[in-house]
Image 1: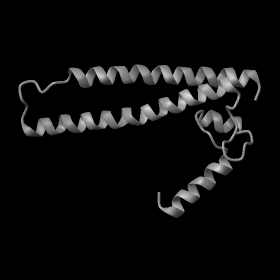
Image 2: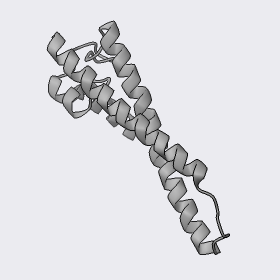
Image 3: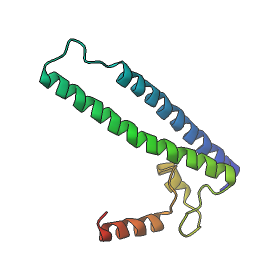
Image 4: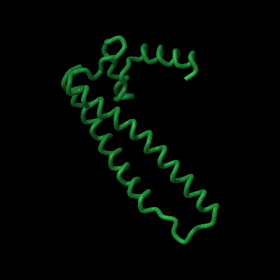
Length: 121
């Protein structure tokens, strides 16, 4: 992978990281400042809890994505970005554009998914 590609992916990952961190800060602020004012009826409280749980689940997934982005940025710095962790072959640029945080080429990812399906994950 050439320097132009690495710069492209670094910028893409940094932009996504900034967006996710901004969202995380907003959500934390919303969750902290949301109180049960005026003791709403049980259905209102249930609706608020469902909304809070939904936001928490989304942020939890985003938290895992943040870690993957940071790992990818570190891989760019150490020169291992774009190399499949299983077969150690280059991951295609098209695959990286579709999923910049991927650690596996298409063939290895498919093999892993078949294995996970076979053992019931």
